[in-house]
Image (cartoon, rainbow, N blue to C red):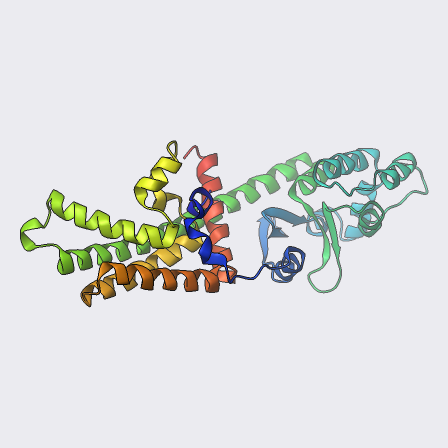
Length: 321
């Protein structure tokens, strides 16, 4: 949970001028810009893409391992009772709009000599979301990783093991890379904080007080000015509102808050150099923060940073961090 979800009403002014996006329309924009990735398993390239934190793997590419006529391989699997039962169970767990009646019609005919079903028919008749059929260049049949792994099992349990192992290896590499990127991002913020603390020292702390408790009081006062501007509360106020939370308010900052925090620290350092009084700096920085929030709140780079932050957090939880 970001700091903006934990603090009080003091920071609500940040989003007064922000515009809400249509989530369905925005999801469509995201799907148009999905990046395709691939893994190589036993000499076969298997494509996949990630959408809304879910991975969809190419059944077409998997089928190529066993037959060049990939449509036949997939349709032969789809016409079995086991495949239909698995697909129906998956959809019932993830898809409230799944058409159970049409599934039951398919299920009654499963395995019959004249029964064949294509991925497109399955998707259209049952409103399934676990499988996608794409035409044109780079097209084919893609399915959620749960379904793709089950498809692998029906063809070759050994090949499934190779696919799962390679897929997990790639995800571990990606998670490590994301963690490194996020660490660099956080270190940049700490570097900006060093600039800020040095500006506080040079502008307001007597030389005799450097590296003493008195300097710590100066620094804490300026840090709380920044906290008030960015998070809407002081460190003490945040702690009283979140007594069980680990760390401080900045440790729980969202990607957006971190970005605004960095820019406000630099601005305040410049104002300190200019000897601007604290009450005037507060008013000016609040206005700047509100402007930055309104501009950045729905920007694509911020959304990418938020995804990165969430991905790193999930990875840390899985590792027990």
